[in-house]
Length: 232
Length: 232
Image (cartoon, rainbow over the protein chains, first blue to last red):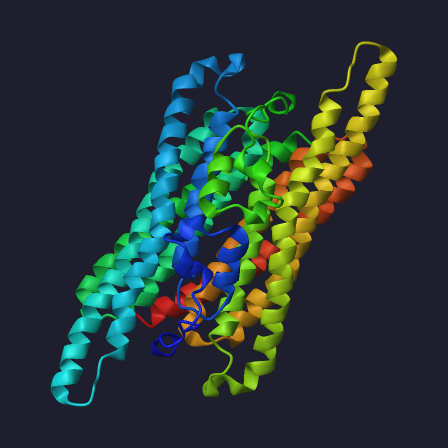
């Protein structure tokens, strides 16, 4: 991990990421290019947040293709609520791409602290511990948002127009990937924490949400897939 | 599906998507906003392609954080090859976002064909059949690219630096979501084809690639996850 710190890329010219205020203002081409390189962020955490935004957006698409259709008049209110909630979650997920990158900064700084004397070592350990906890809490927030999004995916798949059912299935598959990616990014930080009780607490919460997201996303994806296969 | 056709959004002012030449030039904020609405594309297919690009980029990130490290000198060539292949696949996936949208156009046009007389009905059925096949082939190409990317994810997870192992795990989880989403978008078209033999052929190919991608992505994700948990 410490090796990863020095590599923040070009020192002179500003990178695309430095030129935009928020990563959500990067183009798909620039974001994926930035992701491909040796900068420590964006990485798996930011990508988890982006996948969360994609999943929320796909569920919103299902609802948008459902409202206003006579056949689906009975679920109009559900669909309008879904579109509203998905819009909020989409924005929150996009903001979390930057929050995740910000949460990495104190950790990068902690790795750079001197460790010559015993006092310095002790001070560094203390700062590092706080930084690791902070870096674990950010993907945990992403996980919490994936759990919120699960409700939307469920509604999209169960009540949305059948013409968009494949998009609901994609939403479920991508939400599962978001949850799994976020969970790995919790663990990669908690595993280095010295306070095993605090680490265990964060980790258990992450695994609990992950299990819920995996189970239900999987069920939704499989039910959409088998519905489409059966009507083959 | 036919209901979905008329809804291409604003007729007057150009949408963000219409202003850019390629969807990869849209910002993350604009792409997810466009995805949320009632336009038929981008949808699950384009999002599958984007997830493929994200997965390839994350594997490239692992390799970028590995090359030049003394400890990993033995795998330098593997990592350089990975970065090169991931760059190509990333571009191909980004282009497939647009290709998937283009492949939808003939289908949208087919749905609009008149079906007053028997001749018109027969002509429409013929055009529709070609359009459905064309629309199924595009997500099948995305699936084929996910299989190519699998090799990269495997190398990143097995030979890449341990400091980036969580990113390799995220790459696997997101690649699986890409494959699953692409497969649903094959089926949603083949299920409507009248030539059941041709449909079955496309479908079997899709399910074969999907099974391979799911199995191996799952193994990689779980091995990364258990490695991180064990060192807790």
